[in-house]
Image 1 (cartoon, helix red, strand yellow):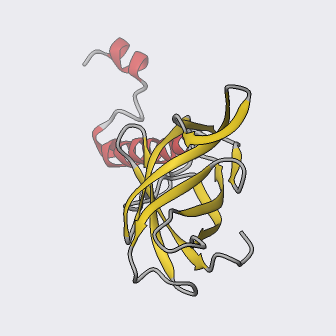
Image 2: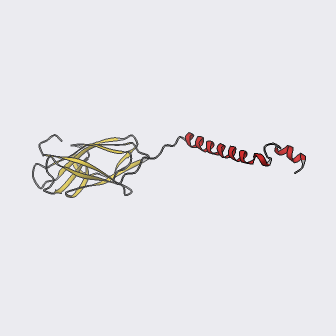
Image 3: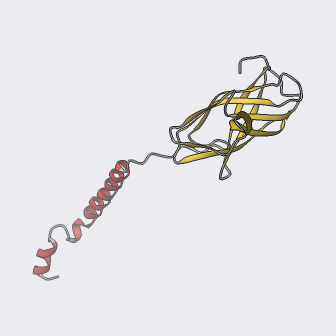
Length: 178
């Protein structure tokens, strides 16, 4: 190495006796830099995924109201809120202990209000809806004899795209508050 070359590269730091110190300083700088960059990224860890639960979807006040006449359909009511990323669409339901279930809504047909199967129910982040008498609800058909007032049953909302969201609904007698 020529004298001119040593001046350009900085003679003291590049000599043989300072190589371990230089390696330590570089490693420490890289480590500190990566910690600072990851800390400033603004990203938070995604919530852990739980099987049978859609992140950001919350169901409260869920209840299945038994029919006044045995053999008639029951109804499920609840409140739902979504605070996840993007949006979700509810496209059906399943109820433990029933042969089938449908998401229903009230609609006007021939100038009369009638009940029938609902289309997909879309929810965007920040949305909340109530499934309640006279509005959205789940109709439950051919309910098994083991679903009785005072108990509970599992409800599964089918989400477009294949996801499922499970929750428990308390079972109430026909005359109890809906």
